[in-house]
Image (tube, rainbow, N blue to C red):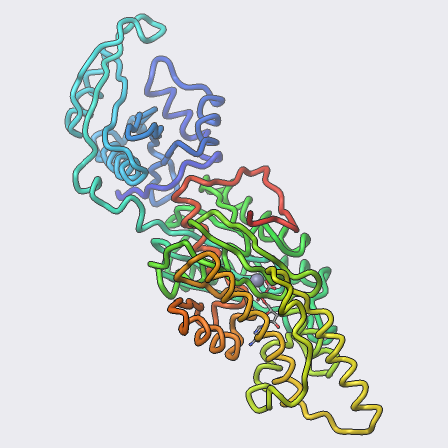
Length: 492
Ligand code: KG4
Ligand code: ZN
């Protein structure tokens, strides 16, 4: 009969205790097991028969380049069937991937079968701890090298991460392997429910996330052809965003982590947007400047190395995407305004109307967009009162040019001042063709490369959360099950 190896979850405790008590004269207590399962420097697995019966388990502790086998046991009727070896091999492989080079364990001097078992796996007795067990029995200390083949696997590179994103009005889930390979990415947009209000209604967003999340996560796994048993970690956006919306994704992710025993990784939504660039070019390396422009943010960020973020400046009022949305709303064009206005702008004259370029010469990296928004609204009123027809393409093109000009000028200056050779554009507004093109040509003149995500990965999605989540997972940056959503979570 074949067995399946998966993470040891708290609900496996009862089955494990039965095997433990039947296997050892001094069995572990429930508290000892639970204390182990909670820790992020441990790897615990169970072996399960096709029918769902747990027939073995084992766990290792990782200490630097050493793996300590804490426990390994197989149900009496299953010994000699290869279950123990399968558990041992998988623990050893995972320990090697976590950076361990050697493995050690203690075994009772009077447990000849176990000593033979570990010899068979390549370990040797290298010492004795006299009277180590309560009964007075000696412990043999065994050591072994982790298998070469396993050892040479990339430190990480095949881990499967399930990511969940619910910070605003898209319910999204994605499955990713090895940090860059998108196995599936599902986005359920709520736009239809918000568009008649001209913007996101937080109350509706939370409710729609609750309705959609189970289906979206299930579909992401289905499309990837995987089940939760193949997943190595769960990543989730825990801020910034609408608090009621974030809470839905985080609570669901915590539930999954608790039920499966999988590690949970928290991702900052803005870091996710920046990591969307890694899906185009996994070799992007800091130092770099990131311009994050979305419905909620307009920020210039200096990234000296991955994970270190210095915000150089932000918007003092409206975000870039918000300005697009508000102008579209005044014109009665619907929500979100960005895609609608940028399509119109492509047909218009960007110099038709002279709108202000706020903060263009402020000498810092701060932005202000509410003045521009007001100027556009005043222009519309003025034209309507004068009984003139508004030329929508010209208006959209002129408004867009005013936004783009300031973004380009400040980004260029930030890149030059910090001497970086790479700029990453990120966030929903990064989908704007004019911004992409203007920024690319301005930077190219100075020999600076621009990275932009595929259009579909600029707006909110979970593939970007999986990319950032995998990177955090590799650093061992885990979230506790008591973590809370943070509406104004900062990057720096
Ligand atoms: O990143 P995102 O999906 O959600 C937030 O994190 O806010 O960004 C959504 C924003 C909306 O304001 C939308 O109007 C804007 O991105 N957007 C665009 C374009 N496509 C989306 N803005 C300008 N031009 C576009 N083509
Ligand atoms: Zn976003």
